[in-house]
Length: 296
Image (cartoon, rainbow, N blue to C red; front, top):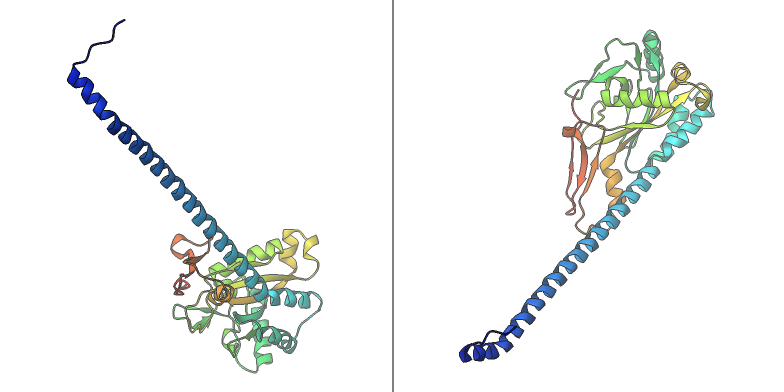
């Protein structure tokens, strides 16, 4: 097989072009290596940012969990106090809880909430009025955050004892937690399971701000709840030890000593409707926004 004969000019052009083709080839290879290196570095940087973000998020989550556990330590202590006593008087309750209120900055109120059947309402209202020396009635919150009489019902969960870190808690006494749909759902779940439960988006009478609050409910029974069936727990329920927390203060106290590094934090209530799911957001700039509790 014979190779085609090229004209002399073509041979000369090819000879003169070899250095340029080599340079072009080197340039193409270099460009490919540069693009490849850029993609690798971009991927590495992305993985580094993702790792750093994950670490920051985990640190904040752990800090918030520790802070929440610290702030709710009173509920376990008070629960043990009730389980070890046949009855706890108002003065005993006040003395026990006052110690915790002085050391926990995000604690709003600590409460004793008995379970009252419909037929027992009048007797409990009379007892409350006698102990307090003033009018006492079961109430609910209206659209203006005022306490109004609770309507007749089959059962109630009124605040009978209360201590507040913000001063006098008399304005919330008698408030029926069962009238708040979020709280009632948590109360019934705690009653049936025997476990501590919580509710967000709660509102109490005469709340002076829109800071989001979480109510934590610990059920107290007449007997050992672990050995009871669900029906027996419902029958032997005495009431609840309740702690209300200003959740914004819990979050702020947990992250104040952490570097922000451009991380925004959002606290979500997965059980709430989409429009009410964001309880609180703390931006990297330090700005804090909140979701106000819905009016009944």
